[in-house]
Image (cartoon, rainbow, N blue to C red; front, top):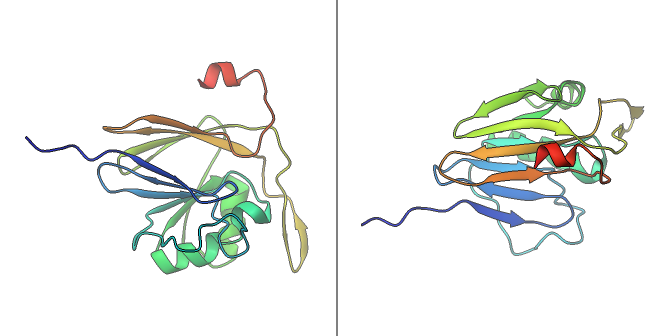
Length: 162
């Protein structure tokens, strides 16, 4: 009998999470690596990161999205305006979505859900409105259902999300 591979979830400090599915899909959520004081310095990301999910545009959630996406050829998934912003910064593959939408990412169905938080991005040209804050519900084939709430306060719709 062959042992089944389990879903792995690795917290990498702050809001950065790596999800590795039984089928081998690697998803990095809110990559904040270089300046993250809680990022485990001895940890190496897998050689392939297929998808990067962004919950909102704050620097402590997107600052390493561009370099990771460029290095790994990742597709960045975010609210439409944030996906367009990331694309304008040199990321070739983006998927812009909206609240309530679901996108199939190989063996993971990613549904974008509401979050209650500010969401603007800042760069050398100032502050940019890049959509609203979001969370994700990840339904993994052969694995669990995971709710990444992003940066949010508690709100009533969490009863529906669960």
